[in-house]
Image 1 (cartoon, rainbow, N blue to C red):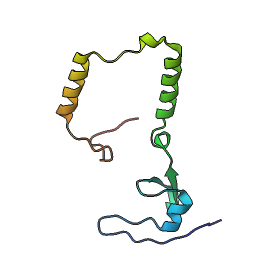
Image 2 (image 1 turned 45 degrees about the horizontal axis):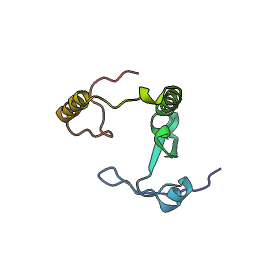
Image 3 (image 1 turned 180 degrees about the vertical axis):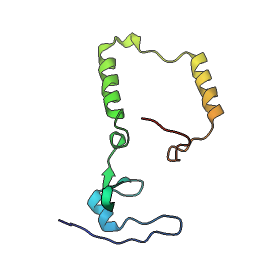
Amino acid sequence: MTMIEEVCTITAKGQTTVPKAVRQALGVGYGGRIAFRVEEGGAVSVHALQGAEDTDPALAPFLALLAADLTTRPADAVRPLPDSLAARLEALGAEVGEVDPDAPIEGEVSL
């Protein structure tokens, strides 16, 4: 059953505007994120990403593990990084430079 059908145009740069009725139905606004899934046969589904859990399936379990660990440790067991390690991490990050998390990954990727 189709609730909404809207048509939009793709620009020369591969961009489009998500129609207002679709944005409202998905509950997304400026800065919101949507995911497109193309199935065999060309069927496309679109859903709104509501938070970090939708973008990385490992994040929610990791945060739960971290929260459980923090509740079982004594308060003095959680300490800041030593200044020397923090400085080294900063220097390594500076060597890497600017990173675009949305850029395609170069090279072979294995799961």
